[in-house]
Image (cartoon, rainbow, N blue to C red; front, side, top):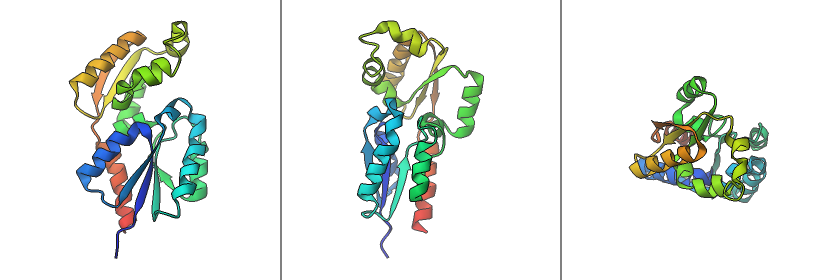
Amino acid sequence: MAEPTVLIIACGALAKEIVELQRLNGWSPIRIQCLPAELHNRPERIPAAVEAAIEKYRDVYDQLFVAYADCGTGGALDKLLRRYGIERLPGAHCYEFYAGSKAFAALAEHEPASFYLTDFLARHFDRLVKRGLGLDRHPELMPEYFGNYKRLVYLSQAESAQLETAARGHADYLGLAFEHWHTGLGPVGQEIGEHLVQWRN
């Protein structure tokens, strides 16, 4: 009997990491369809984009899974997924499932006024933060966006001195204290792996 085919509808900001997890774990029945990472800045558009992908692929694959957290949709994504009976990654945002819920709760409790970066955001900071928020054209907006933050926490998935240096530079640009936590891919890999076992059974 053939393995069920599984499609992960993923945030584009997770593409590199999910592809790496697929390679490391030999997840042969999984295919990945990424949505634009720019939705990170427009969370109100995420449910409609996810629904369009579900409608396009739900008759093509045996199982669908959504590699988004709530990501600022205010529960709208969960409401959509309940209609289709599709599950997603746990948590309020990608920082939580990268770090693991317990570790992230400790980070947030220690300093609630934290701005978080992942490898993807450290790599694409200029495009998604500087230009995405208009800070390159209107630096006077900096206090409005970041005036209430105290530190930048870099949650790294890969061990990269280059990305760590970039993240430190981003913290300096924002005028925030810098902290680095290496999460690896363990928590998110475990979550997807557990669902894959369920699908195979």
